[in-house]
Every structure is written in C-alpha cells, then in structure tokens.
Image 1 (cartoon, rainbow, N blue to C red):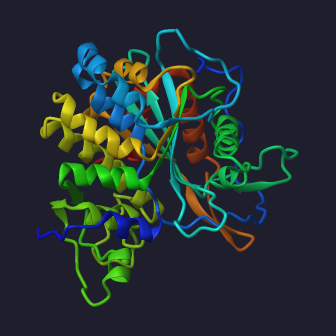
Image 2: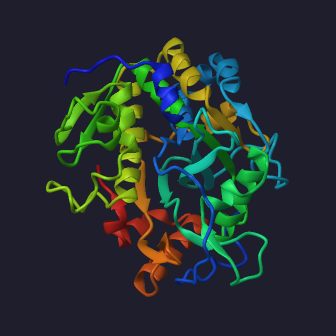
Length: 390
C-alpha cells in the first residue's frame, strides 16, 4: 500500500494488589442516570504504553536491562498517580498484578489544559508473571460518583478522571478510586498514562505497522482531513504509516450496521475501536520483535524514547527497569484482550454504557472476581465470546 510520509507537527495539531479483597464488587445493575458534564472528545488514543514498552525492553533479560537502565528509567515521568497506598520499594515484584492504564486526550488549543481519560484498560499479569490479559473499560461506562451518598449520583467512568481534581495525580486517583469500587480491587499495583503521540512516534521509528482490518472501511478523520481524496481502506492485512495508523485507531463510525461490510463479531462503535487499539498494540510489539528491537539495545532505546516522551507512571516505589525485568516472561503474542458485556442506554438525554441485569451482570461480576483472584484463564474459557480475536 502506498504511504505518504506524515509530519509530527501536523499530528499534534490534530489534537492531541493485594490478593482478593474482603468484599467483592458492588451491585452493577442499571441505575437512574444524572446528567453529567464530561466534555471529552470521542476519539480514542492508543495505550497500554508502559506494558508494551516494558515488555519489549525486558526481552533480553538481566544483562540487557542493565545496559538500558538509565535510558528506560529516564524515558517517562514518575508521579504519585495512586495516592498513599502501600509502597513496595526494595521488595521483589510478585504476581498477580493489576495495572491501571489510560490513554489521555488533550488538544493543543485546550484552554484548561486538562487531559481526559479517553481509553481505559486494566492490564492483569498472572501470579507467575508469564501471562497478560487486557480488560477494556468503556469510557462511557456508568458508575457511581465518587464522594457522593450511595444511589444519589452517577457519571461516566471517564468523568471520574476529568472531574477528579486540578492535578493529573488527583484526577488519576479519582479514576482509580472509581474502578476500585467497581471491580473490588483494593489497590492497583501500578499505573500508567500515555498520550497517543507516543505510539505514533513509535510507528515512525519502526517505519510502519501492519494492521488487519476486519472489513472495508472509510475513515472519518481521513475524510475530514482529505475531503478531496476519498479513500477506502481495504479489508485484510496491510502496512500503514504513522498518519494512517492514527486514522485507523481513532475510528469508531465504521463499526456500524450502516457500513454494508460491517462485521459485528469485531465489535460495534466504541467496542470496535477498542478492539482495533488492542490489535494495534499487539501488532506494534510484533513489528518491534521482527525488526530486532528486543535484542538490540540501541534500537529499543529509540522505541523507548518515542513512547516514553508521553509516558507518566507509578509503580509504587519500583523503577521502570524493575518492572521491565519482572515482566520479561510475558510474551506479547500470548496476550488476550477481553471486553465487558455492556450495552448502550440513553438516560436523561445522555448515552451511557451499562451492564444489563441477568447473565451480563453476573458475567461481569465474575470477571472482576477473576481479576482479584487471578483466575482469568478459567473466566476466558467460560466466556469465549467476550474474547477479542484478531
């Protein structure tokens, strides 16, 4: 596929555990809505940056990690994203782990300079630190408001970040509190924030990335940017450059029954977009491995610098190198990605994602229990239809 070189400046102008808790997850039945003010633009940003980069960086083992120590540790910015929980500095990293990761959206021209949680995922690593599962949390999922009496206020989960405080740390802590209440996970073991620019820079470092489209697609942002150049992105696996990858991972409108080529098994709307984001992460890791970024310290350094430029992390006293070495046994191709069995509901004139009562609610509660008790393999085996398949 012919690719036009993309420009970083042009892209920027686009807009840029503990063991099982004492009690399980709360009742998630559909609840009366309250109108909320989220203000978050709809497009998704690529994420799971820290997991992706650290898995790549850790691939060579202890000697390799030592060579890269300074570069990895200095790649991102450490902030107290998880508040005053237990510090694990000086201790070995032990599984299972639940890491909360978000992709943020902050346009260059935003007057408030507030970033927004536009993609939300929980990365679960098993006890042996050899398997990883990604759980996508819909940004419009309906949740109780933090610090409000039970049953009196509800918002979208990304609203708990946007409205969580003035600083990035306060906002992330608000989101973590909401998801702890939702899932029953008492304390997340780590956290990461990444802007989509980091992964786009990674695509530029790699030259391109192969993405496999589930159907012929016309992309909203490509048509918006290039109204005089109508284009159909064809079904199947093709190499895409930095700008094309951006268009693809931002797309949600094509995942609709209005598209004559729509494949409902891929996911509808925001779920389709989340599925593509997860596919993008796995394909980026695959390309990095094929191009020798796992075995060549100089090459992986370029990748780390690219993603790390927009990475903020908190590993409860551990450094990125500590985490990288701990995750060296996780193979990118073995990662599984799952989605919540939610559906769209219009409430009070606003669109929410809700977990219906009955089997979907029970299945979701069992998923959260699997996260807490490290039984994800069993849950996936019992719920194969909620497993995203590339």
